[in-house]
Amino acid sequence: MYSSPKEFAYLLLYHRLRDAIRQGAYPYGSRLPAKRALAEQSGVSVITVEHAYAILCEEGYVEARPRSGYFVLYRPEEYWQAAPAEEELSPLPAPRPLLQDAFPFSVLAKAMRRVLSTMGEQLLQKSPNWGCPVLRSAIAAYLARSRSIFVRAAQIVIGSGAEYLYSLIAQLLSRERIYGLESPSYEKIRRVYAALGVTCDPLKLGGDGIRSTELARTHASVLHVTPFCSFPSGVTASASKRWQYLHWAEAREGFLIEDDFSSEFSLSSKSEDTLFSLAQQQRVIYLNTFSKTIAPSLRIGYMVLPENLLLPFQQRLGFYSCTVPTFEQYVLADLLNSGDFERHINRIRRKKRQQKEE
Image 1 (cartoon, rainbow, N blue to C red):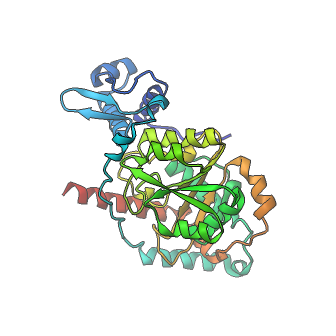
Image 2 (tube, one colour):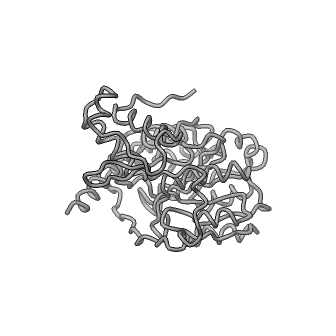
Image 3 (cartoon, rainbow, N blue to C red):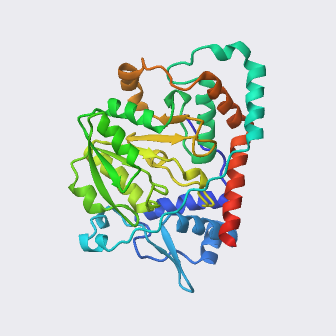
């Protein structure tokens, strides 16, 4: 039903190479074709190949070796059960501090005035339980543009911050399940689940995500992960690890909760692949919030449900009222639809790139 927007040549080449690597055409440790040879074979420029290779490097599928070429790092399923001794030696990288750069107050104030003048007394109306359609549609369009997540507005549920959404998810998936959490992870995640009576199993992180031995030994059937820049460790899951999470959920007939609170500020030339966009079996619930990208006082979070969970959510939890005021929802929709939000994100990314180059 949904198709991705027209892509640049380097993105098309990237997707072709990524799929070839995953399907085993280029096994672990093998060398990718030389840039000039691949350019001639594909009918593109060498610069296009360089851009595609750069993205593969950024996402951990390959590595560049000086004067040797590009070599595959992606490990297919048979390599995932790494030796415990090797995993124990994987050091955690130094935590990456989150960028604190305020959203321009003048822009926010203008959006508020626009909404007040155009909506008037309609803002006094109660929000629909899942959130106002104008905001859910705006978020769906934003996810398609920025994250390659193509969903219907009907799959999006609005809530006042991540903690509220955690509680809804625990009720939806069942409190009787065991939930695997990254260790270390954001302490509030464990506390919210514990307050609901959920059993949590802390799973030790390695340098590229949760260690394979931890995934193998846990009895959890729900995995709550932050694939990009997990807090407080700063660990970003490798390409291999992300696919391992997906296969883990399928094998357990379980679910992944993808907490994607900081990926907007990624410096990658292509947006980070989300578990939700990679998933084929509809076993991922995607979470994000605007309190980190706009202001802590704007307590608006959202989750994207896979199609197979829409009816269970409606039957069990559809009666819950939306906890975000209608006015705030319309203001956020205005920021998304006007492009103000994305201009802010792009400004922060440019600033971070400049700081990195200095």
